[in-house]
Image (cartoon, rainbow, N blue to C red; front, side):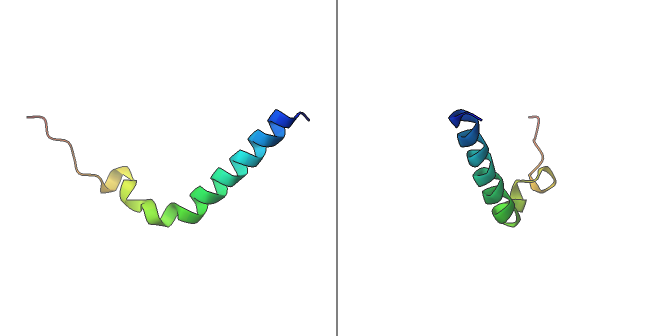
Length: 40
């Protein structure tokens, strides 16, 4: 493979591991936990 594909795959693995490790900390961002919008 070329260097670009290797770099992209490494980056994706790093981002995936970060998201999976920190997923519990960001439950407040789930749509069910957000305040409903008000149409004024």
